[in-house]
Length: 324
Image (cartoon, rainbow, N blue to C red; front, side):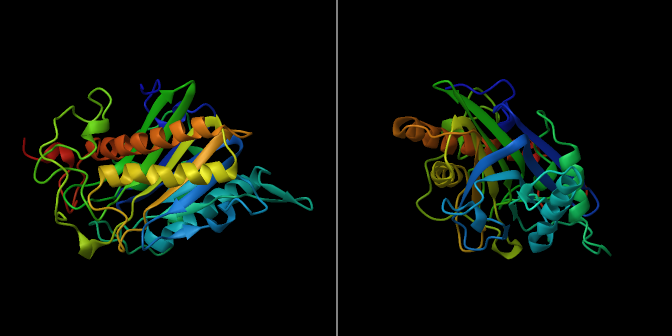
């Protein structure tokens, strides 16, 4: 297994990602889209999710494709980012056609970043504008770390961030995109080593050896600040909506490998899955894709924390500021 050319989810052909943030509020939004609607599924394992239109992604629903997927800060207020994206698509005459009307399909998930030191005293909800800006910024290349939905994210021990990674296996590309805002930690104890180190390709998040085995007891958490890690995994392999749902389900294993603890009652941990190719893949290929999605998401989580950059009034250090 090897990463794609950019080691980003946009190594999956056709996908575009855009970020937008507000440094004063210390929050942001990330949009994943494509030139054409794409098949998507979702799986939620956290106990405190915040979502929009995820019910639409069940395999038995009428609409089988989406125009974009949105990850945003702002807790429930951040769901308005999807409205900004939907409004922008409608202005472009893009969306699900109903009797001559266009209804953009834009599922979204949010994380809680309201206690991170930013100025939350806005007069008007900023997230619709951030969503539209992120869509306008959509490209096949984007920055990770303190960007987009990960701009104000935190973990138990460090600032979080926006992470991405990719892998090429058996002729298909698998990518992951994640806003890391976990109750748990991506790093081991007081060290700079990552729980995801066994899955690292090259030195993509420092190349440090693991400091200890998986813990027998739960490490310290940031219970008082609230949380949620939200992610997207994607592939160019042909998948049905049901197969996308299975891909999202399997990808949660990567979250559990990279964040300790994960999937808690106080996280809204969620994974979307997307396929840019119509059709259906065979069971053996799906198995391989599921395993790859999990390892790629684990790597993306570590890469997001690794790439975070210090900002004024941040409540926690960035990974780069931890002692050696």
